[in-house]
Length: 143
Image (tube, rainbow, N blue to C red; front, side):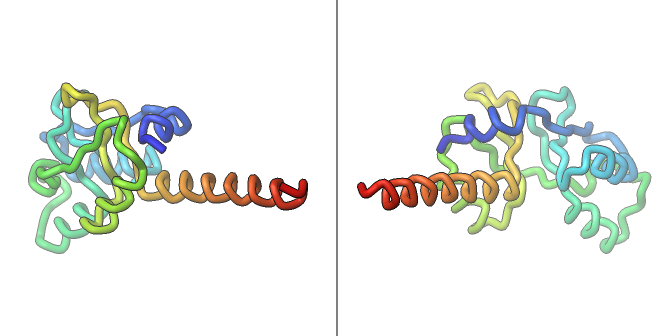
């Protein structure tokens, strides 16, 4: 299954925040949108970085104040995927690199969505349930 299918099911909303916003704004936006990460974007359409709950905790542990900028705690090297990438590829990257959120961008680098590990797990479970139902139907109908 391609990532475009996941985005079609979940929608294309992406919570973003400007790099010059304050860390306290990150905390508020994470709570408001009930998400684990925000894409950091100066214009709302390109990816400058990503900031997660983990980044906030690590920043606070290292003495970051709530009035410091998002840029001071964000992750700047962001792995992005295209909408035509396959879910199996994404699962491998997320597992190996310990990413929980992957921004989805078009060929021009414009942000078109975000996929979380929860989205990936839900999609795989739905696929497995559909396969199981097909097999049960096949067996009960006698092949």
